[in-house]
View 1 (cartoon, rainbow, N blue to C red):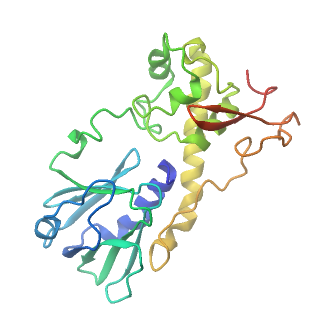
View 2 (cartoon, rainbow, N blue to C red):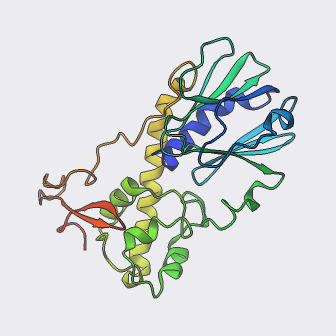
Length: 271
């Protein structure tokens, strides 16, 4: 499933090709995604100019002079740019034809993504209105996370994966960040000191920023390619390495399940 770094890589990849362009036509080939695609997009959008492509959590916001489209890639969705006369692939469900002669195609084999109309104030949309801060923003700091955690007995890993607390810390990134901060994933969130949360915030920002930077090397894939960004390619410290030696101390990496998600940690380096 595309996580925040992959969605940000997608945004950076398509944005230069969309901003400033006029939408010539909208073609919806399969209306039933996670929620039905609004039936009036083909009337709302032709003639509108793309003003910007932003991201909130794992949602892309395509701002136009007619309003904003809210796009979620779901579990298998991707965006790519192609020439308008190039053949459509089997799972290309939506196309935006641009004045440049290119077309933005949304491919989604599982059809669990979303294209929704968010109108003039997208941040007020029910899917966005109650989300926590962006992890790379100044609003996400040790004091904020410490205050949110007070009195909570839930595991810190599920706590930082809660989008109401902070957005975009997916399973891989949570495991890697907790290892970097030296915190066990099953520690009660409310039992962690502010000083240790400062280390965790720093680790989350580092891991996500590094993943986004590495994803940037695949931007060329959004034009004429499959549209899928590179995933978390750096050498993983703990995730998926159960039984293998810790890269820092050689202790075998352990695995446990928290919130129905696999979690990996080093019992020596984390406490």
